[in-house]
Length: 423
Image: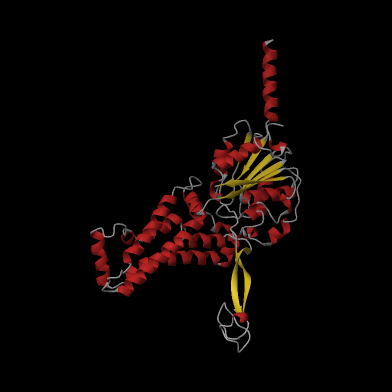
């Protein structure tokens, strides 16, 4: 009897193991098996596989996936970033390798940052950032000795109190944001080229794969990071994918310091010496403040292609004089010899006002490419899921990512039944 019970327990254990759904966790470019560790620990009842793959290019990545995993039509593939692209390529090469896929922040239509790295546009952006943020410091360095001495006295008598930035310089800000080179290594941007040029928007690879169709169940997750996304993703990169707020307070404090320094250099109405020079120094610091406040994020969004095509956001009324050909700018006149005060000569027209709307992004990739807007792969049997407040670097640890995975794997949300439980 005891023997029978033991055999029965062993049988149940074995069949239970076979019933468990295997999950293959696939990291992104420049990462490794540790990226998904925290998320994988949230599903202890599953059989997990986490490996480090060859991510030198999409083809090598897919080949490595194929050679190091056993084909199983019940297996779930979960991929981040380039890992998601490699999973799609693997399906094209071996359709029976897995049964369903979940992607997080995958550049399914390509990553514009790759194009801009290859063209040199990204380097120009980084140079512009440094140039603008160093303008105030440079203006002070170029100031006459007596003017610098005046500010030295003010500083030591704490008038004003917040111009310590003049002594510590701009380096902490640049270091925090990762500019001057470290952001490219933290975000693995340099690793994107030249071998990974197939990730560029419009590359021959992206063009060849866009027509590939799939009926397998898919959950495609796109990150929608909060503003300022460029600071949050830099913060997550520096902290290895953890808290994206760790440097936000410091960023805001330095932004406030720029404003305070600019105010401290304002000559005022009773200025006697070096008034113009003081004004130019104040303007240089104010330019840095304005750039930190909005310009830097706007430039970063352009770099990652996160602005949509122009849309009409309103209208303005323009008066045109049709009786004279003299050019008055917006109040144009196109015929001669009628008096400007003749009201019958003026015609009012409505002109549209255009603006480019911001596309949701994870700080590195816009929503369109994360969801494969131009890819046929996501057009069938696919749930598109938004991950609010999540940037590209923190998807492996963020609680929102975990909630989405629970929704798919534990059936807490209405995704395809394939992903649920041990079916």
